Length: 275
Image 1 (cartoon, one colour):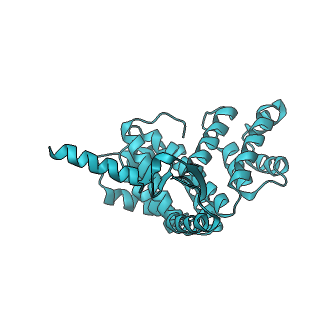
Image 2: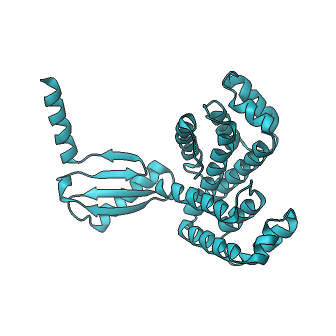
């Protein structure tokens, strides 16, 4: 999320997103979307009950007791994947109890983004979320209707506004208008857009090579990365003479550098270090 997270919470966000990566690896769009809905449910419970947040972020409680607490609280309402993620997150350290809500909401949005990516619709969802944000923010009538407490009426209105939009967009906007959490319309949509972009960064591979790749090479690389990530990966190829040979692949903040130049640099550092 765009919310400022303290040191412990920032580190926990990284670990939490790795848990989500593992959970959505190899699943179909329906399963990823179901996981998203369940994580949104967890978010709503934690946002509404400060005692639950404090119990799960209390560093004096051990992981086993938190696991039992979560199981008793959620096992009848959410599946094994969502419960597993919530359990892993509860064992992490947090700078503030409220950070737990921000992070689980981010995972919920990213899980739906994964569903859209598996369905080949992530670009469309990002465009539709942006268009919806502009339409709602620019209409006093819509702003008033969608910030009311009438959930059923809001659900109907969202479906009317987003007629023809993707299922993922409708689900995300439906959750958004029911969980403002004190945010303005602009701020809430910005949070969702930020989380969609964060998931996109995890399924876009920046590939640096010394010379252009032919279609066969690109297809083999894409297939290999798809298997590794467990869902479709977009490849952006950059020609960089400094690479010399081999290939450098970067996913968001994760770099896999197998270039000759990198190996030479590593050898040089080793030589200098041995003196």
